[in-house]
Amino acid sequence: MVSVESGQRQGRAKSRRTEGDLRRRQALADAAAGIRPGEADVPAEAAKVERFRCVIYLCGAPDTSITAPRQECTEYADAFGWEITDVIEERAGLLSPHGRDGLGRAVEHIKSGEAGAVLTAWRSMISSVPQEYDEVAREIEKAGGFLHVKDSAHSERRVAR
Image 1 (tube, rainbow, N blue to C red):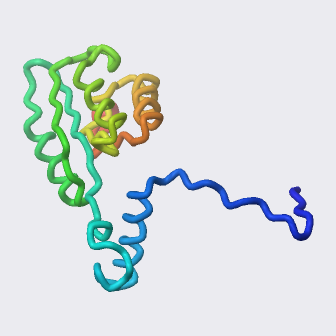
Image 2 (image 1 turned 90 degrees about the vertical axis):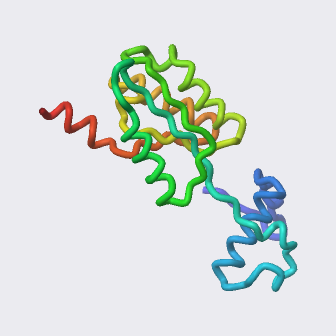
């Protein structure tokens, strides 16, 4: 239990958000309240709402086509209004996630702030080994983003057969 003596208050916690983030949040709140850009005392450039950005990562065996999963991920991102910053296709087969240059580039997009998520079609495109998959997801989360699998049931259906 924490006690506070009367008359003493703790200072306001410091915000970790940048000035741009604060302006964008205010613009979103104004839009939700029905306030048009320019009606409030928020500059018009701050009222612009940026789209969420993602990078699509696809991996398959050297002789397989990943055209359909690419199209599905593109449509999925469009359905959520996500901007696609890059599409990385790799033909690594059963190579460990840490040995793949393309996956490393996808994580770099998160670290640099160019994207907020790595979108992939199936869990197995990251790794079929749960520990390796979890390791990659943690690495992306530590970089400030998240890993999103469009169809996690795909891998489960293959295992169930």
